[in-house]
Amino acid sequence: MRVKTFPEIGHRYFATTRNVRILLYGHYRIAYLLRADGNIDILGVFHGALDIERLNL
Image 1 (cartoon, one colour):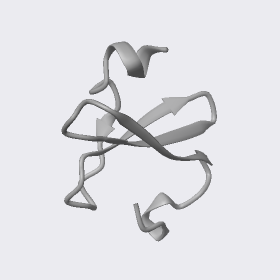
Image 2: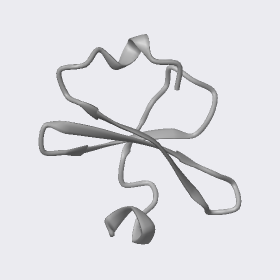
Image 3: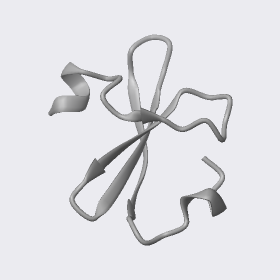
Image 4: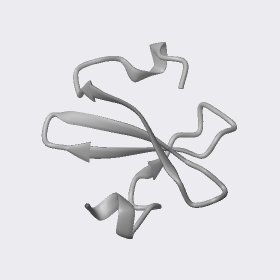
């Protein structure tokens, strides 16, 4: 999995103060939280047509 090897591969989501990143995969966006200890929490997988600004990531 690329995220495990390269955790900062997704672009930074600046609508929050947390280190949330978005990775594009086909028609989907994978939102994940990069923790200070190196762990990764998947926040959700969303269809690209969804207005992600409505979500509270």
